[in-house]
Length: 370
Image (cartoon, rainbow, N blue to C red):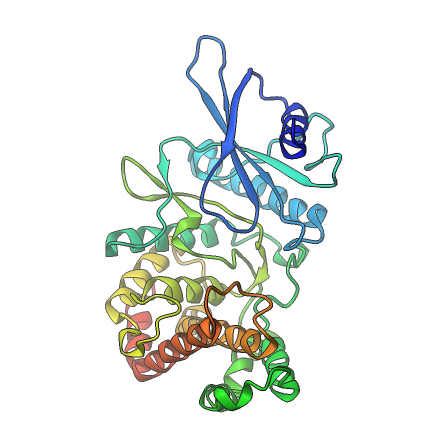
C-alpha cells in the first residue's frame, strides 16, 4: 500500500462515521486543500456522505487557529439559524471532531485533517451564468453578514495576515519596483504609473476603519460563487462554505470581491482589454440582492462605501499580480510567459471602467439602501 493510501486509511480510522466506510475519492475543483468525499453505508438507510479535507500546510501555517476560527463561527451561525427557525444542518457548515476530541486530526506525517457532513440537495456552480444565479449568491453572502452581525470580530485570528491590507500590498509593490530583480520594470511602466497615481486610494478604507467610520466585521474574504452551495430545488443560496479565510475585516471586502469576479465577463488573463468591462447591470443585480440579504444590518457608511469595495478589491488584485510579475512569478501559478502581467492589466482595465461609471455605482447603492 502506498504512503498516500496508508495515510488516508489512518485518517478515516480517526473519525467516527457511525457506519461502515465504503469509499473515499477526491472531490471538487479546489486548488488549496486536498478534498475527498467519503461514502458510508448506515444500516437500513441510504448512503451518507462526508467531506474530508487535508488543510494546506503551505497556505495555512497555524491549523489550530484556522480551526478555532471555523468552529467558533459555525457554532455561532448554527445558533442564529435556529433562532430564525432555519435548518442548521443545511444552512451552516458543521465540524465533526475526531475521536480524540481535538478540533482536527494530525496524521502520522504531520498533515492536518477535518471532517464535515455533506450538504445534500445542493449544487456548486463555478460561474454565474445567469443574473438570477449571481443575485442568489449576493443574497447568501448578505445573509452571512446579517447572521454574524453580533459576532465579536476582533476575537478571530488573522489566518493570512494583512490579506486585504491595501497599504501593505502597496508597500510590497513599491519594494518590487525598486528591486527590479528581473529587469521587468521597463516592460510595465504604464501599469506601475497606474498604481502610483492611485496611491491615496489604497488608504481610503483603512483610514475609515481607523477613524471609526467603518466597523470591523466577520468577513469571508473569498466570496466567489463556488463558495455558495445552491439549493437544487429553489436555486437559492443555502450554505456558505470554504471558511478558511474567515477573519476580521470590512464588509466592503466581501462585496467588492464578488463584484470583481461576477460583474465582469472576461477571463482573468484576457489579453484583449476591449473585452474587459464592468457590467453595470450585474452590479445592480448583486447590490440589490446583497442588501436584501443583510436586511438592514449594515451602517449607512458601510453601504456608501460599497463601490469602494469593488474598486479596492480589484485594484489590490491587480497590484498583487503586478508585484508577482516583477518578483518572478513566485506566488501565482502561470502557464505562459507574461500571464501575471496580463492578469494585472485586466484588473486595472476593470478599475478604470469602475471609475468611469462611478456616479452610476453610487446611485445604484443609494437606490437600494433601506
